Image (cartoon, rainbow, N blue to C red; front, side):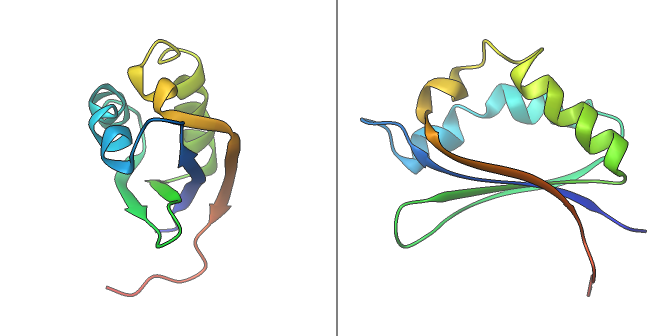
Length: 100
């Protein structure tokens, strides 16, 4: 099975931490679990303070639909206030290799 990954790199908004970002994602996690094709999600932090949010779907169409809902259906989520929106780098990509 191929996986389509939604990979978002960002920095927390002024006055917020990576922990704030994670805590503010409770409703987003619930939203993702309801999405067709959702497989898993990981949020990691880097030594320089960036956050990398990786969401896996079973196909590109499912990934596009799920991602659209984050700014559409979930536009009122508290997570958006924890993000420095000027720092966001967002992309969809297909996994080339998977090792269990």
